[in-house]
Image (cartoon, rainbow, N blue to C red):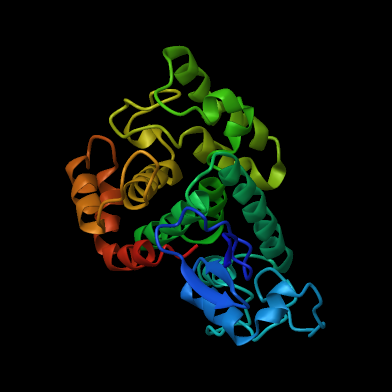
Length: 294
Protein backbone atom coordinates (compact mmCIF):
# COMPACT_ATOMS: atom_id res chain seq x y z
CA UNK A 1 0.00 0.00 0.00
CA UNK A 2 1.42 3.36 -1.00
CA UNK A 3 1.26 6.05 1.62
CA UNK A 4 1.12 9.78 1.08
CA UNK A 5 2.61 12.80 2.82
CA UNK A 6 1.38 16.23 1.79
CA UNK A 7 4.22 18.26 3.32
CA UNK A 8 7.12 19.10 1.02
CA UNK A 9 10.10 17.29 2.61
CA UNK A 10 12.55 19.81 1.15
CA UNK A 11 11.11 23.19 2.15
CA UNK A 12 8.50 22.00 4.68
CA UNK A 13 5.54 23.68 2.98
CA UNK A 14 2.07 22.16 3.32
CA UNK A 15 1.11 21.34 -0.28
CA UNK A 16 -1.99 19.31 0.50
CA UNK A 17 -4.35 21.75 -1.17
CA UNK A 18 -2.30 22.77 -4.19
CA UNK A 19 -4.09 21.98 -7.43
CA UNK A 20 -1.27 19.95 -9.00
CA UNK A 21 1.77 19.55 -6.75
CA UNK A 22 4.89 17.91 -8.08
CA UNK A 23 5.36 14.30 -6.93
CA UNK A 24 8.05 11.68 -6.56
CA UNK A 25 7.84 8.03 -5.47
CA UNK A 26 10.52 6.70 -3.13
CA UNK A 27 10.38 3.32 -1.39
CA UNK A 28 6.68 2.93 -2.21
CA UNK A 29 5.83 6.26 -0.61
CA UNK A 30 4.59 9.26 -2.59
CA UNK A 31 6.10 12.62 -1.69
CA UNK A 32 4.61 15.95 -2.75
CA UNK A 33 6.46 19.15 -3.59
CA UNK A 34 5.66 22.83 -4.08
CA UNK A 35 7.87 23.14 -7.15
CA UNK A 36 9.95 21.24 -9.69
CA UNK A 37 13.06 22.60 -7.99
CA UNK A 38 12.19 21.04 -4.63
CA UNK A 39 11.24 17.77 -6.29
CA UNK A 40 14.50 17.60 -8.22
CA UNK A 41 16.55 18.29 -5.10
CA UNK A 42 14.74 15.45 -3.32
CA UNK A 43 15.20 13.00 -6.17
CA UNK A 44 18.98 13.56 -6.22
CA UNK A 45 19.33 12.33 -2.63
CA UNK A 46 16.07 11.47 -0.83
CA UNK A 47 17.76 10.28 2.35
CA UNK A 48 19.16 13.76 2.98
CA UNK A 49 15.61 14.99 3.50
CA UNK A 50 13.96 12.04 5.24
CA UNK A 51 16.63 10.26 7.28
CA UNK A 52 16.90 12.84 10.04
CA UNK A 53 20.69 12.46 10.08
CA UNK A 54 22.58 15.08 8.14
CA UNK A 55 26.30 15.74 7.90
CA UNK A 56 27.27 19.37 8.28
CA UNK A 57 28.61 21.03 5.13
CA UNK A 58 29.56 24.46 6.38
CA UNK A 59 27.71 25.96 3.39
CA UNK A 60 25.04 28.45 4.39
CA UNK A 61 22.24 30.08 2.47
CA UNK A 62 23.14 33.63 1.47
CA UNK A 63 19.70 34.92 2.47
CA UNK A 64 18.70 33.14 5.70
CA UNK A 65 22.04 31.61 6.79
CA UNK A 66 20.50 28.12 7.05
CA UNK A 67 23.05 25.35 6.53
CA UNK A 68 22.60 23.63 3.16
CA UNK A 69 22.86 19.85 3.29
CA UNK A 70 22.35 19.00 -0.37
CA UNK A 71 23.57 20.72 -3.50
CA UNK A 72 22.94 24.43 -3.15
CA UNK A 73 19.99 25.99 -4.93
CA UNK A 74 21.70 26.95 -8.15
CA UNK A 75 20.77 30.51 -9.03
CA UNK A 76 23.02 33.42 -9.74
CA UNK A 77 24.40 35.07 -6.62
CA UNK A 78 23.80 32.03 -4.37
CA UNK A 79 24.03 29.66 -2.67
CA UNK A 80 20.39 29.58 -1.56
CA UNK A 81 18.56 26.88 0.37
CA UNK A 82 15.26 27.33 -1.46
CA UNK A 83 13.24 29.34 -3.97
CA UNK A 84 11.89 31.62 -1.23
CA UNK A 85 15.34 32.75 -0.21
CA UNK A 86 16.33 33.30 -3.83
CA UNK A 87 13.24 35.46 -4.39
CA UNK A 88 13.77 37.48 -1.20
CA UNK A 89 17.43 38.09 -1.96
CA UNK A 90 16.64 39.06 -5.58
CA UNK A 91 14.25 41.81 -4.49
CA UNK A 92 15.66 42.87 -1.12
CA UNK A 93 19.24 41.61 -0.98
CA UNK A 94 20.83 44.98 -1.72
CA UNK A 95 18.77 46.62 1.05
CA UNK A 96 18.94 44.12 3.90
CA UNK A 97 21.68 43.84 6.44
CA UNK A 98 22.90 40.30 7.06
CA UNK A 99 20.78 39.51 10.12
CA UNK A 100 17.62 40.98 8.55
CA UNK A 101 17.47 38.06 6.13
CA UNK A 102 17.34 35.71 9.09
CA UNK A 103 14.65 37.89 10.70
CA UNK A 104 12.50 37.83 7.57
CA UNK A 105 12.87 34.06 7.25
CA UNK A 106 11.54 33.82 10.84
CA UNK A 107 8.57 36.04 9.94
CA UNK A 108 7.85 33.82 6.93
CA UNK A 109 7.74 30.73 9.15
CA UNK A 110 5.38 32.51 11.57
CA UNK A 111 3.10 33.63 8.73
CA UNK A 112 3.00 30.06 7.39
CA UNK A 113 1.49 29.04 10.73
CA UNK A 114 -1.17 31.78 10.40
CA UNK A 115 -2.10 30.56 6.92
CA UNK A 116 -2.22 26.96 8.15
CA UNK A 117 -4.65 27.87 10.94
CA UNK A 118 -7.09 29.29 8.40
CA UNK A 119 -6.46 26.34 6.06
CA UNK A 120 -5.29 28.73 3.36
CA UNK A 121 -4.29 27.19 0.03
CA UNK A 122 -0.54 26.74 0.18
CA UNK A 123 1.22 29.88 1.41
CA UNK A 124 -1.32 32.57 0.51
CA UNK A 125 0.55 35.29 2.37
CA UNK A 126 3.81 34.49 0.64
CA UNK A 127 2.22 34.39 -2.82
CA UNK A 128 0.66 37.83 -2.43
CA UNK A 129 4.01 39.10 -1.13
CA UNK A 130 5.69 37.86 -4.31
CA UNK A 131 3.12 39.66 -6.44
CA UNK A 132 3.54 42.80 -4.32
CA UNK A 133 7.31 42.79 -4.85
CA UNK A 134 6.88 42.48 -8.60
CA UNK A 135 4.41 45.38 -8.75
CA UNK A 136 6.41 47.53 -6.33
CA UNK A 137 9.53 47.17 -8.42
CA UNK A 138 7.54 47.98 -11.56
CA UNK A 139 6.24 51.16 -9.90
CA UNK A 140 9.80 52.11 -8.94
CA UNK A 141 9.75 51.56 -5.19
CA UNK A 142 13.22 50.92 -3.74
CA UNK A 143 15.12 50.77 -0.47
CA UNK A 144 13.45 50.48 2.90
CA UNK A 145 10.01 51.18 1.46
CA UNK A 146 10.33 47.90 -0.45
CA UNK A 147 11.14 46.03 2.77
CA UNK A 148 8.10 47.61 4.42
CA UNK A 149 5.79 46.40 1.65
CA UNK A 150 7.37 42.93 1.85
CA UNK A 151 6.68 42.72 5.59
CA UNK A 152 3.27 44.36 5.37
CA UNK A 153 2.14 41.93 2.69
CA UNK A 154 3.44 38.93 4.61
CA UNK A 155 1.82 40.02 7.87
CA UNK A 156 -1.42 41.43 6.46
CA UNK A 157 -3.59 38.85 8.24
CA UNK A 158 -1.76 38.73 11.56
CA UNK A 159 -4.83 40.30 13.19
CA UNK A 160 -6.78 37.11 12.53
CA UNK A 161 -5.01 35.75 15.60
CA UNK A 162 -7.79 37.55 17.47
CA UNK A 163 -10.66 35.97 15.49
CA UNK A 164 -12.24 32.92 17.18
CA UNK A 165 -12.00 29.60 15.33
CA UNK A 166 -15.79 29.38 15.33
CA UNK A 167 -15.82 32.36 12.97
CA UNK A 168 -12.52 31.98 11.14
CA UNK A 169 -13.13 28.35 10.21
CA UNK A 170 -16.88 28.51 9.74
CA UNK A 171 -18.20 26.76 6.64
CA UNK A 172 -20.77 28.89 4.86
CA UNK A 173 -21.90 32.49 5.12
CA UNK A 174 -21.06 34.54 8.21
CA UNK A 175 -23.80 36.33 10.12
CA UNK A 176 -23.71 40.15 10.34
CA UNK A 177 -22.36 39.86 13.87
CA UNK A 178 -19.63 37.45 12.77
CA UNK A 179 -18.71 39.69 9.84
CA UNK A 180 -18.30 42.56 12.27
CA UNK A 181 -15.85 40.50 14.33
CA UNK A 182 -13.91 39.46 11.21
CA UNK A 183 -13.73 43.07 10.02
CA UNK A 184 -11.78 43.98 13.15
CA UNK A 185 -8.69 42.03 12.11
CA UNK A 186 -6.93 44.90 10.27
CA UNK A 187 -7.12 47.08 13.39
CA UNK A 188 -6.07 44.15 15.58
CA UNK A 189 -3.08 43.54 13.33
CA UNK A 190 -2.19 47.22 13.48
CA UNK A 191 -2.19 47.16 17.28
CA UNK A 192 -0.02 44.03 17.37
CA UNK A 193 2.63 45.37 15.03
CA UNK A 194 2.70 49.14 15.52
CA UNK A 195 4.71 49.07 18.74
CA UNK A 196 7.44 46.80 17.32
CA UNK A 197 10.22 49.12 16.24
CA UNK A 198 11.37 47.24 13.16
CA UNK A 199 7.80 46.73 11.96
CA UNK A 200 6.25 50.05 13.00
CA UNK A 201 6.37 51.39 9.43
CA UNK A 202 4.45 48.41 8.04
CA UNK A 203 1.60 48.70 10.54
CA UNK A 204 -0.33 51.11 8.33
CA UNK A 205 -0.22 48.63 5.41
CA UNK A 206 -1.69 45.96 7.69
CA UNK A 207 -4.35 48.37 8.94
CA UNK A 208 -5.36 49.41 5.40
CA UNK A 209 -5.14 46.17 3.42
CA UNK A 210 -8.94 45.95 3.01
CA UNK A 211 -9.42 49.59 2.02
CA UNK A 212 -10.59 50.17 -1.57
CA UNK A 213 -9.73 53.02 -3.91
CA UNK A 214 -13.33 54.29 -4.12
CA UNK A 215 -13.75 54.44 -0.36
CA UNK A 216 -16.00 51.38 0.00
CA UNK A 217 -13.47 49.28 1.91
CA UNK A 218 -12.87 48.90 5.65
CA UNK A 219 -12.12 49.55 8.48
CA UNK A 220 -11.94 53.34 7.93
CA UNK A 221 -13.44 53.83 4.48
CA UNK A 222 -10.32 55.58 3.18
CA UNK A 223 -10.34 56.74 -0.43
CA UNK A 224 -7.74 57.21 -3.16
CA UNK A 225 -4.36 58.39 -1.93
CA UNK A 226 -5.61 58.47 1.64
CA UNK A 227 -4.74 54.76 1.46
CA UNK A 228 -1.03 54.07 1.86
CA UNK A 229 0.55 52.96 -1.42
CA UNK A 230 1.64 49.58 -0.06
CA UNK A 231 -1.99 48.74 0.76
CA UNK A 232 -3.15 49.88 -2.70
CA UNK A 233 -0.60 47.53 -4.23
CA UNK A 234 -1.64 44.73 -1.89
CA UNK A 235 -5.32 45.03 -2.88
CA UNK A 236 -4.52 44.08 -6.49
CA UNK A 237 -2.22 41.25 -5.42
CA UNK A 238 -4.75 39.78 -3.00
CA UNK A 239 -7.42 39.72 -5.70
CA UNK A 240 -5.04 38.12 -8.21
CA UNK A 241 -4.30 35.31 -5.76
CA UNK A 242 -7.95 34.88 -4.77
CA UNK A 243 -8.99 34.44 -8.39
CA UNK A 244 -6.19 32.19 -9.64
CA UNK A 245 -6.00 29.57 -6.86
CA UNK A 246 -8.61 26.86 -6.28
CA UNK A 247 -10.74 27.42 -3.20
CA UNK A 248 -13.16 25.00 -1.51
CA UNK A 249 -16.12 27.07 -2.76
CA UNK A 250 -14.98 27.69 -6.37
CA UNK A 251 -12.40 26.81 -8.99
CA UNK A 252 -9.53 29.05 -10.02
CA UNK A 253 -9.89 31.08 -13.20
CA UNK A 254 -7.14 31.57 -15.81
CA UNK A 255 -4.77 34.50 -15.47
CA UNK A 256 -6.30 36.19 -18.52
CA UNK A 257 -9.74 36.24 -16.91
CA UNK A 258 -8.31 37.54 -13.63
CA UNK A 259 -6.55 40.29 -15.58
CA UNK A 260 -9.81 41.31 -17.26
CA UNK A 261 -11.54 41.57 -13.90
CA UNK A 262 -8.74 43.67 -12.41
CA UNK A 263 -8.89 46.00 -15.42
CA UNK A 264 -12.67 46.29 -15.09
CA UNK A 265 -12.45 47.70 -11.56
CA UNK A 266 -9.50 50.02 -12.09
CA UNK A 267 -10.46 53.37 -10.62
CA UNK A 268 -13.13 51.86 -8.36
CA UNK A 269 -11.64 49.03 -6.29
CA UNK A 270 -8.06 49.57 -7.44
CA UNK A 271 -5.64 52.44 -7.95
CA UNK A 272 -5.21 52.96 -11.74
CA UNK A 273 -1.49 53.54 -11.19
CA UNK A 274 -1.15 50.07 -9.67
CA UNK A 275 -3.25 48.49 -12.43
CA UNK A 276 -0.99 50.12 -15.03
CA UNK A 277 1.99 48.52 -13.29
CA UNK A 278 0.12 45.21 -13.32
CA UNK A 279 -0.21 45.44 -17.11
CA UNK A 280 3.49 46.23 -17.56
CA UNK A 281 4.46 43.28 -15.37
CA UNK A 282 1.78 40.84 -16.49
CA UNK A 283 4.25 38.44 -18.11
CA UNK A 284 6.19 37.91 -14.89
CA UNK A 285 3.02 37.80 -12.79
CA UNK A 286 1.50 35.17 -15.05
CA UNK A 287 4.69 33.12 -14.77
CA UNK A 288 4.46 33.15 -10.97
CA UNK A 289 0.75 32.32 -11.03
CA UNK A 290 1.41 29.38 -13.37
CA UNK A 291 4.13 27.94 -11.17
CA UNK A 292 2.42 28.66 -7.86
CA UNK A 293 6.03 29.19 -6.84
CA UNK A 294 5.81 29.27 -3.04
